Length: 65
Image 1 (cartoon, helix red, strand yellow):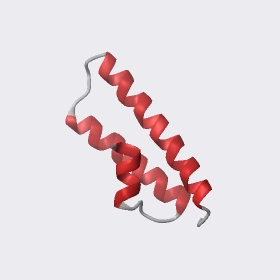
Image 2 (cartoon, helix red, strand yellow):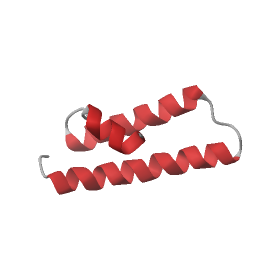
Image 3 (cartoon, helix red, strand yellow):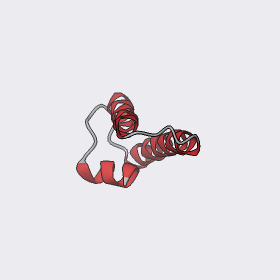
Image 4 (spheres, helix red, strand yellow):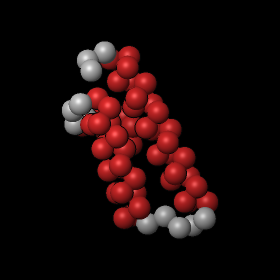
């Protein structure tokens, strides 16, 4: 998949999903560093599955800050 707009859409979807998960956990005061690492890894895995490559450093920073 090389279409930049498709990649951006996928990135936005993953970003929205992971942000929602973090917010839900944080509301309950249940968030731990391990949780954040797992959430980010799941997002990276989903990106690789859908795009067919690992995300770049800049893409990771754009999605996860």
